[in-house]
Length: 264
Image (cartoon, rainbow, N blue to C red; front, side, top):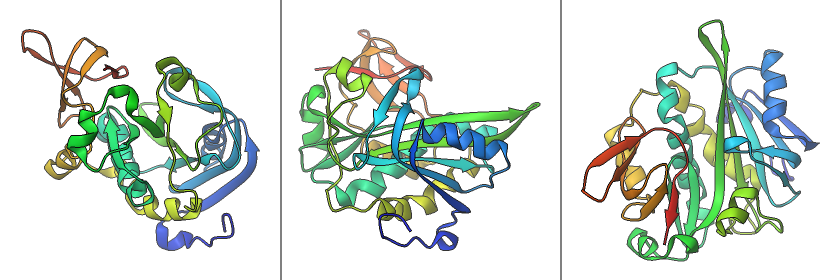
């Protein structure tokens, strides 16, 4: 039961739901639970995070009712899947939240879920980069035992209302935040996302053709100019999860780390 809505955990494949009113971060709790042997499919949800974690060590306060703050523990993930896991998670989130958002739900490499006040992909790409609003973010962390992958923790934050205080990244870039419709229960988002997310760690090393097509259908960065991880024009993503950028001479390079920063 979450917010008065029942969740059929067994049907969803969720081994257990650990719900806290307040934590430092759900990722911290996931590490503790996994170290104690929490099974595959353990889900940690918090109403408030005092020190939510993001990519690059960023931290922020996640207030009550502002969003769905959660971390999933996966124990069936393969080393081969890690290179594209963040992309797959971002795609799964975009597909899950799209029915609950006004406007177009897009993706920005490697895992940002953005919205545009636009009816379709072409209209979203025609808008300035600063007009895109951040709806959700992803953080993936791994733990190893000797030389073997022990478990993966997938931290996800989805705005359920516009936060009063934007996180560090939004403040730095000047980008706006967005949210799902106010009446969207957190339990409904979990129920939609769980069946897909819990299978992602066991998938193949590369994105399948259908996954690449699905990503391309939401990639709002294509055609825009980037300053990081290198200067160039965004071409798309490769099947191994790399970002494809074309330089001024048209030479295409692949980038597998860093953040994609766009300019208008």
